[in-house]
Image (cartoon, rainbow over all chains, first blue to last red; front, side):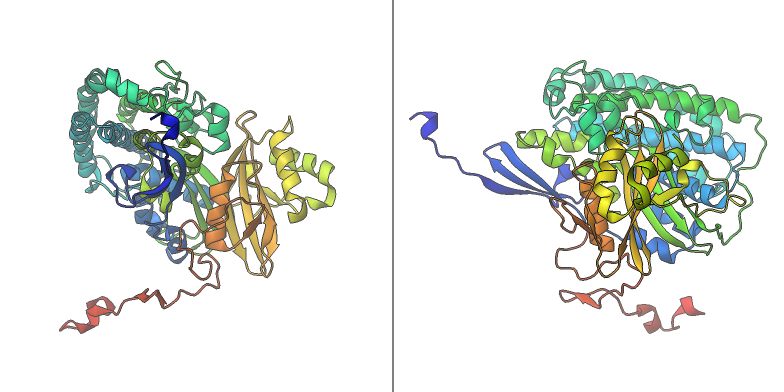
Length: 376
Length: 181
């Protein structure tokens, strides 16, 4: 019997909502012929908590704990993004010491987020050990976070005007010690998995996204940089004290497969952790002898003057945009949160066409999507 | 380009379909960057304006950052935050649609990113984007009634037999509801 005589049939396959490699509660409706995906329709909204609507009933500072839950893997950065927007709206000046603490916790937050992102990627395609290594290192950052604010996941630490608490004694030294510990660990991770032949074969050349497509579909952050476009809000539209810091913006170059493939996105995150360490080290140097307060004087019930802002900040999952509208009262009129993961969902129908089901899992992990950030 | 220059350029091309520049912030209280100023576009020409914004050599707004929406009582407003990765400038454009007839052209053919962004605004605010290839609800179930982000929205008592509220069980405690004291 020749292969042409074989009759195949397209079947509809449900991937999720409860699937270990969809990174949360997301459903993909796949039309497959054997192993080949013909069509992929993402179905989201299972974790929709109406955070944007809740903000209309909350006071400005009262909304901070909700921003933790937008992206629970990078809660520090979400707090920061929202605080930035409120500060712009209310015209609050942040003391220098607070800005430096923000940079330290923000970059440590980026490291923990990328640790989970890259660890989960390797776990999803079958390598379980690197994930455990990353979780071990993430715990150390969590310990540092616990010492500065008492929480390990949802911090509510960065608030309009500054940060909640000053650094405890010895904390800065311990952060530096962590940097010294962690730098060789990135190297070790690379030796363990990054250039492993099986691993690169699973990722290289899979779902290559060129720069133009990435911009058109609104990919941001490491996903955009993975496509070879050098753009980082910390450098190109800086906020806080980032202009004072010296760091590189790594981009994908297609060393192993094609430019903008899954491996490039993975590799950009690996490089970014090194850059974050650089920033943390510089901030630790700068904060010594910095005697200003850790927070500005902000009223308990904030009433920003009438106005609106769109503020964006570079989160681990790319640009987080906050469109806030105030009418001069203690509640916001509208809070619109633009997140990197939601934007990344739009590109699935395009890139998944013609992939194997197993490759689709690599694509989901390499775009580093987090379900609560999609649904908000 | 500053917001003033972008608005003047569009005004020269599209005439009175482009409104004057609006500043909602009070510059004396909060000094905001020029790009927080915005202007309104008539919904009849929005598609042409969007194409012009993206493809004109001086504008090249290739990045659609965000699509938001506002409920302004008699009108619903779609808000497009645009950015040019080439020229590194940004602008906010608003389109007013009447509440009884909230239809406007979709920007999906211009920016693919608008696909999901507009679906969300359709779902939660109820603005109907005409020419959108796949205008379905994205967050809420397909048979949900109403658009929650509208200011006059009231939450239904139940959805398919599932209550959306819960009795206050604290009142049944021996000491009563301690949160009320």
